[in-house]
Length: 268
Ligand SMILES: Nc1ncnc2c1ncn2[C@@H]1O[C@H](COP(=O)(O)OP(=O)(O)OP(=O)(O)O)[C@@H](O)[C@H]1O
Ligand SMILES: [Mg+2]
Image (tube, rainbow, N blue to C red):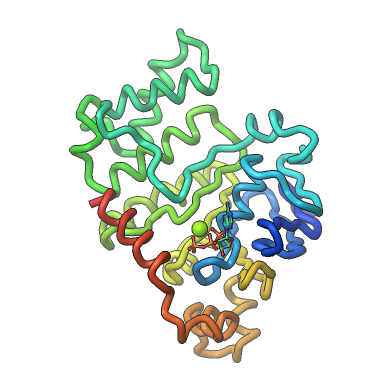
């Protein structure tokens, strides 16, 4: 079997906020074609990790290379190689789907004569052609997420980051987003996502890193992780519970709960 190509690597990646260590010496590798899941309880450091990998936040120490470029030294090259759908909503409800896409086409420097065709193909791919000229605030939550993913891959980046792509979505909408993520992966896009839903990780991820209080506490394929907590019959829920035991009793806390509710409300 041919060696897998490394497309992203972190070495002792660390981010502090004052004396608080949000991401603590995290090292992992992502290979081309992976659907790579970052999992962990609220406050584990998942979003902070993604922000460093997308050049939105400089690391305090350690390194990360994305598509061969160091995030600290070649941020513009990193940005050209990635798409990013943030944890909070990024589509504008007062514009149509088409107008939202046009904003991103300009942002990504897609030549004017190619824009219409690229946007057309993207709407087809995401199953949104029927609603392209409707205001986004009339979209369902699943449609909004699919639009945001379409915006993020308009420039065909080799790597796509998705921070909690299906938070607040009902099961049917969630399935429609999973379908698009799987299609992108099949077409060769490497995907790095965070999620709190173990069935989502199970359905999508080829590799998983579990974070807890800023540290990486487990790293492997879903099968390897299940084996590590007892093997036969173990589920990813068992894996999550095993590696984040001491936070489960606390039940999330007000800040986290209100944040999830807010996102859920905007998507519904
Ligand atoms: N700009 C900031 N200033 C201070 N602390 C921060 C900042 N950003 C994040 N933190 C803290 O760092 C920790 C990790 O936050 P992060 O958002 O990365 O967690 P997460 O794993 O994405 O959590 P969630 O599942 O709730 O999205 C949290 O304790 C958070 O309060
Ligand atoms: Mg987060």
